[in-house]
Image (cartoon, rainbow, N blue to C red; front, side):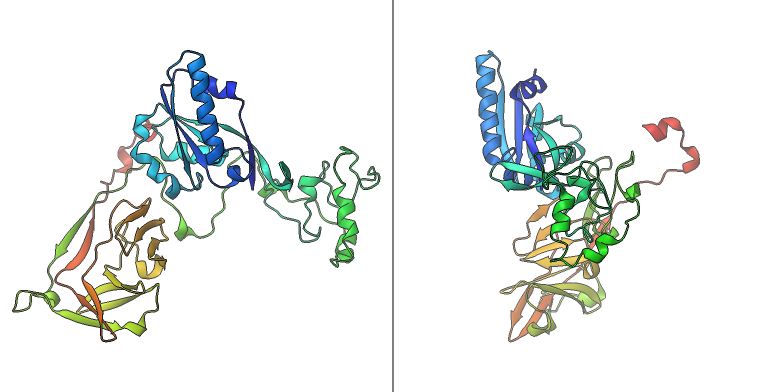
Length: 378
C-alpha cells in the first residue's frame, strides 16, 4: 500500500490563504489504512481548518467528502457536479490521487494535503516500513520474497556486505540485515543453489530514468484522456427498416429470440432479430435487449462488453451502465437505449419496431499542411 502522512497544519493554511470555500476530498483506500487521508482524518482536518480560520479572523468554509479511490477516474467523476462552487480542492490522497483530480478537473485548483512517502506494509500498530520502490525488474524470485533493493541500504545483489553484526545492518543498526534473513531461510525455501550463483548487475532500464513510466495491460482497457478533448456529441436516431414494419394492428410484433436457457444469468449474447443485430442480457429475474454497440465510440459490445451484477462495462474506455435501472455509472455520459423485452414459457421475446442506431458526430478534419506553430501550441 502507498504510505503518506498529513502535511503540517501551517503549511496547509498557507496553501489555502485567500480561499473562501474549499472542498477537502478524502480517499478510502491506502491513505485511509495508514490514518492520514481517510474519512475520519479528512473530517478532523476540515474542523481544524475551520477553527484556525475563526481564530485568525478569516472567513473560510471547508466542506469534506470521501471517495473510494481518488486514483481512478470513474470514482471521482461524481465530484464534477459541484466543483464550480469551490475556490480549491484539498486532496487527502497520495500524489497519484492529487494528479488524477488535477488532470480530470483542469479548471479547478487542486492542492495536496499529504506528503507521499513509499509503498510499504504495517509491521506493528502505527508503524509502516518500505517494501517496494517500483524498480520495474523484480528479483524476489531468488531472494525468498525479501527485497534487497528496498531493504538493503547498499542495494547489494549478491549477499551481505560483511559489515553486519548479529544480523543487524551496518548502515543502520536499528534494522535487520536483509541478506542475513534471506540466508537464514534459504534451506527451508530451497534457495541455496540459486543464492550461490552470481547475479548480474541490476537491470535499471525499467526503473525511473528521467521519464514517466507507463505500463499497458491491454490496449482495449485504456480509459479516455482526463483532459484536453471534449467528447463528441451523440444523437440517437430511430431508423425504420423493412424488417420492423408495423403490424396491421398498429403495434410491432414480438419476436422469439432464444430460449431462456440459452443465455446464462449475468451474461450476454448477440442475436439477429429479423435482420437487426440485438444484444441480449440475462439479469436473472429480467432481461434487457439493446444495440450491440457502445454509444460512446461504436465499440462492439459483443467483444468489449462485460456484465457483472447488472453492471455493463464497455472495456474499451470503461463506460458503465446499470442495465436494470438504466442509470449511468462512472464516467459514462450517454445512456444505453433498449428494446422492449419479456420472458414467457421458457422463451425470450423482443419487440423491435425500429432499429436503434447511434449517430456519431466526428470532429472536422484539419488539413495538416495548414497547421502552423500557433495552431500546434494553442
